[in-house]
Length: 165
Image: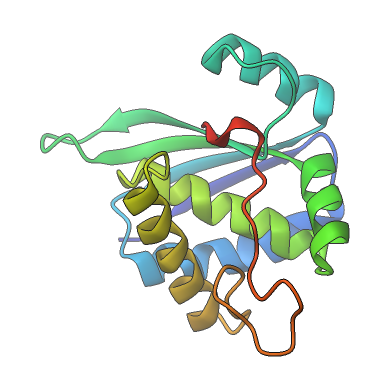
């Protein structure tokens, strides 16, 4: 199902072309039911305000996802993602990767939430992050959660603030 994608960048405008290209490919690989997706790249202050308003949690988080429209089978067909660019930059620096890859990871994570996956339980966490690794590998980017040879910590730790979306 083709995706209509809208991206607005209050910060991180340089990441928009990369995000558009790879998010479309990720959407196709997922066979997502989402037909229309809006993505907003924002800063810490705006993300903190949204995180507090919708989740009741102070401070920024990496991504928030919002189901906007559902079909007759209650599948999300329209949604919105809000991605915190400064958080992506912090995590990219910490993980030794590029910010645009971290932003793509957050967008993919939000898209999976719109598809019904939830990472708040141990089993859900494993399922969701395994799916992220599968899609990122298919896109030629490679896994971010699976153990990698030669890395001292040997896996990515999920440091999302409070684990909530």
